[in-house]
Image (cartoon, rainbow, N blue to C red; front, side, top):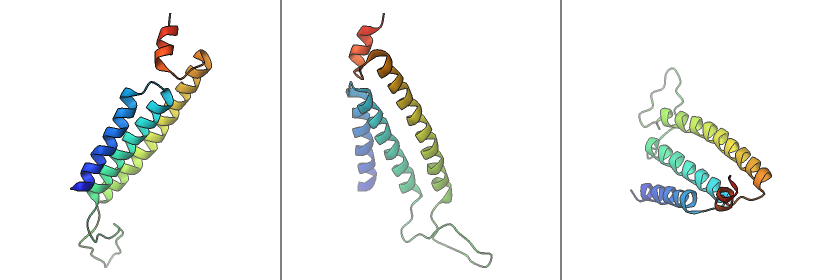
Length: 112
Protein backbone atom coordinates (compact mmCIF):
# COMPACT_ATOMS: atom_id res chain seq x y z
CA UNK A 1 0.00 0.00 0.00
CA UNK A 2 2.86 2.36 0.79
CA UNK A 3 4.32 2.02 -2.68
CA UNK A 4 1.05 3.12 -4.25
CA UNK A 5 1.17 6.24 -2.09
CA UNK A 6 4.73 6.85 -3.24
CA UNK A 7 3.48 6.68 -6.84
CA UNK A 8 0.87 9.27 -5.93
CA UNK A 9 3.55 11.47 -4.33
CA UNK A 10 5.72 11.16 -7.44
CA UNK A 11 2.75 12.11 -9.61
CA UNK A 12 2.00 15.11 -7.39
CA UNK A 13 5.63 16.26 -7.65
CA UNK A 14 5.34 16.15 -11.44
CA UNK A 15 1.98 17.91 -11.34
CA UNK A 16 3.45 20.65 -9.16
CA UNK A 17 6.29 21.11 -11.61
CA UNK A 18 3.94 21.24 -14.58
CA UNK A 19 1.45 23.66 -13.03
CA UNK A 20 3.46 26.00 -10.81
CA UNK A 21 6.70 26.53 -12.71
CA UNK A 22 7.14 29.24 -15.33
CA UNK A 23 10.07 27.81 -17.25
CA UNK A 24 9.11 25.61 -20.22
CA UNK A 25 11.93 23.15 -19.52
CA UNK A 26 10.74 22.66 -15.94
CA UNK A 27 7.18 22.15 -17.18
CA UNK A 28 8.41 19.47 -19.58
CA UNK A 29 10.35 17.76 -16.78
CA UNK A 30 7.16 17.80 -14.68
CA UNK A 31 5.28 16.10 -17.51
CA UNK A 32 7.98 13.43 -17.77
CA UNK A 33 7.82 12.78 -14.02
CA UNK A 34 4.04 12.40 -14.22
CA UNK A 35 4.41 9.94 -17.09
CA UNK A 36 6.92 7.86 -15.14
CA UNK A 37 4.62 7.82 -12.11
CA UNK A 38 1.73 6.50 -14.19
CA UNK A 39 3.94 3.85 -15.79
CA UNK A 40 5.22 2.77 -12.38
CA UNK A 41 1.65 2.55 -11.08
CA UNK A 42 0.60 0.38 -14.03
CA UNK A 43 3.56 -1.95 -13.51
CA UNK A 44 2.69 -2.26 -9.82
CA UNK A 45 -0.87 -3.23 -10.69
CA UNK A 46 0.36 -6.20 -12.74
CA UNK A 47 3.03 -7.28 -10.26
CA UNK A 48 2.61 -10.46 -8.24
CA UNK A 49 4.76 -11.55 -5.34
CA UNK A 50 7.03 -14.45 -6.36
CA UNK A 51 5.60 -14.10 -9.88
CA UNK A 52 7.15 -15.65 -12.93
CA UNK A 53 7.62 -14.31 -16.42
CA UNK A 54 4.66 -14.82 -18.75
CA UNK A 55 6.52 -17.27 -20.99
CA UNK A 56 4.92 -20.67 -21.37
CA UNK A 57 6.06 -23.88 -23.01
CA UNK A 58 3.60 -26.37 -24.45
CA UNK A 59 3.83 -28.75 -21.47
CA UNK A 60 4.23 -26.14 -18.74
CA UNK A 61 1.62 -24.59 -16.49
CA UNK A 62 2.54 -21.50 -14.46
CA UNK A 63 0.21 -20.68 -11.59
CA UNK A 64 1.71 -17.45 -10.31
CA UNK A 65 2.38 -15.39 -13.43
CA UNK A 66 2.67 -11.61 -13.71
CA UNK A 67 0.12 -9.91 -15.94
CA UNK A 68 1.49 -9.53 -19.50
CA UNK A 69 -1.27 -7.12 -20.55
CA UNK A 70 -0.03 -4.45 -18.15
CA UNK A 71 3.53 -4.88 -19.40
CA UNK A 72 2.45 -4.38 -23.00
CA UNK A 73 0.38 -1.33 -22.02
CA UNK A 74 3.40 0.21 -20.29
CA UNK A 75 5.59 -0.44 -23.33
CA UNK A 76 2.99 1.30 -25.48
CA UNK A 77 2.73 4.28 -23.13
CA UNK A 78 6.53 4.60 -23.05
CA UNK A 79 6.66 4.84 -26.84
CA UNK A 80 3.74 7.27 -27.04
CA UNK A 81 5.12 9.32 -24.15
CA UNK A 82 8.53 9.54 -25.82
CA UNK A 83 6.94 10.83 -29.02
CA UNK A 84 4.89 13.34 -27.03
CA UNK A 85 7.91 14.61 -25.12
CA UNK A 86 9.90 14.96 -28.36
CA UNK A 87 7.06 17.01 -29.83
CA UNK A 88 6.84 19.25 -26.76
CA UNK A 89 10.62 19.77 -26.72
CA UNK A 90 10.57 20.67 -30.42
CA UNK A 91 7.81 23.22 -29.76
CA UNK A 92 9.80 24.63 -26.83
CA UNK A 93 12.89 25.02 -29.02
CA UNK A 94 10.87 26.84 -31.67
CA UNK A 95 9.41 29.15 -29.00
CA UNK A 96 12.92 29.87 -27.75
CA UNK A 97 14.09 30.65 -31.27
CA UNK A 98 11.20 33.05 -31.81
CA UNK A 99 11.04 34.80 -28.43
CA UNK A 100 14.51 34.17 -26.96
CA UNK A 101 13.20 32.97 -23.60
CA UNK A 102 11.69 29.93 -21.90
CA UNK A 103 9.72 32.02 -19.38
CA UNK A 104 6.01 31.71 -20.16
CA UNK A 105 5.12 35.03 -18.52
CA UNK A 106 7.47 36.90 -20.85
CA UNK A 107 6.14 34.98 -23.84
CA UNK A 108 2.59 36.07 -22.97
CA UNK A 109 3.68 39.71 -22.76
CA UNK A 110 5.41 39.50 -26.17
CA UNK A 111 2.21 38.38 -27.85
CA UNK A 112 0.54 40.99 -29.74
